[in-house]
Length: 155
Image (cartoon, rainbow, N blue to C red):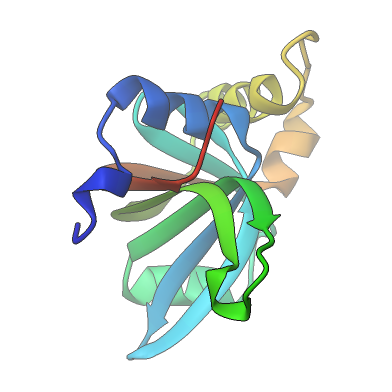
C-alpha cells in the first residue's frame, strides 16, 4: 500500500468492518471482461457467504473462473472545504481476494444460511424447510488475502 499512514493493519479492525457491514461488491472476470455484483453477505471463519438464484451470469462466470475480488466500504462521509480541491471523504474500506464456490450439501447450506441470518438478524433463530434450502443457491468465498484503508476516521 502506497500510503502506509492510511493502512488498516489491525486484524481486529478488519474483522469489525467485516462483521458490522452488510453489502459487498464482488468482481469477477468474464473472459477478461470485468463484471461486478452487489450482494448481502454473512461472515465467519475468514469466509464470506452469499445466497443467490440457482442460475445466472455470475454462476456461469464462476464455473469458468472462480477467482474473485471483493470490496466492502463503510463510514462514508463527505468532508466539505472552502476550496474545491480540498474536499475529501472519510471512510474505511477493505479489498480482498479469494476463490468462490457453491455449497451443495443440505446440512452445509443450512449452516451457511445460519451464518447469513445471524449476520443480519442475530437475535433470532431461523428454521429452513428442505424445500427452501433446495430453492436457494449458496456461495462461499474463502478469503486468501485482504487489505484495509481508512481516511479521517474517528470512531
